Figure 1 (cartoon, rainbow, N blue to C red):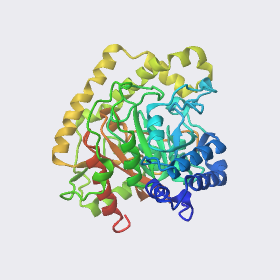
Figure 2: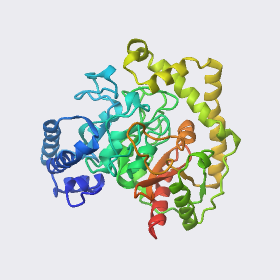
Figure 3: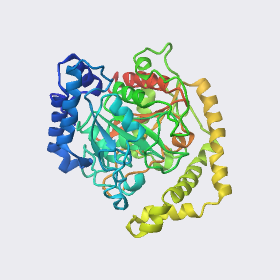
Figure 4: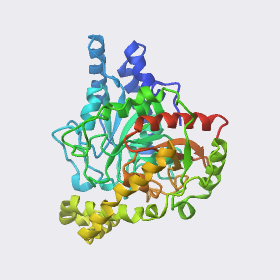
Length: 449
């Protein structure tokens, strides 16, 4: 779905440039996005809160700052969608549950504050699943409204894919960035665990929660993520470090052609659909990658159980109040996950959590030989039906390990639906991963793969 002839179809990078150069005003861009939302929102259902007048007022203020000669941030005047688990002081944050209906935070999350500081227009709040887990909201896939857009970042992915906004925030505790990006045919980038602050974001699992970005170009994904990567003392898992130069590194040519390995993962045989099993070998053949190039080994066969143990136990702890006071208003799947978590023994939780270090040592050895791992982003095409959000199983190993991952919209299924290719890199080397992703996308597109 494209509106390339209107400002709404611009990438964030191009829109920001035009606004800086005076070729486009922020009001024109925001109005174009609002027109696009008016056109298709009834079908897609990406938004849970949208105040058109407020969005235009932000755009007018941004344009006034430009005309006054003030310094402009890298996203000046560019509208961004905010997943409705990120606190916003001027909009409700309801976390996809009736239990938080009407909730109005007093402060912005760190991510939202950084976006405002960069000049972005906070367009509104996008739909999330219930408490960012499995029970879906109202959002449909913009390529086929009879199919799921994925979850839990469903509204954000659908809004970007349908040109309602050029950028949106997302989060991932299992597969909530990579899967919807794959299903909706856009770029979904989940940086290394601890690079982007989660302060003011709904807490599901400190061990697993990671913040990411959705975009329609790699340049946009790098631009937005670079704005958000910063040490935040309010998130104990962020650390003082030199910020990676994502945009600059993305534009560079790799000094040597990247070495890529394919990891089918233990989930391939049972969960990959027929479209994926046909498309991936063709892509790998084109890239000169052996389909049997990488066997992750026995420990990675257990990672699915370890993630479930950690996630369910953390949900039981962090959603205790919702369960205790509003169990009857939670979905059966949410209640079941919390109750499973209540039964997790401390010894089992700690045993699962301590395996991450060993898995990352195994990955470190792999990344000594390869620049990145090519692997499925999802089971394949977005499934029909809006009652579920699809299986996150192809994200599980990489989420558990906290390594950076990005879904690239490179393949297409037999029904014309997009299928993402996931690229995974070494933890903390996000800039190189994005550079490799650009190389891969250009190599794959070379003959229409």
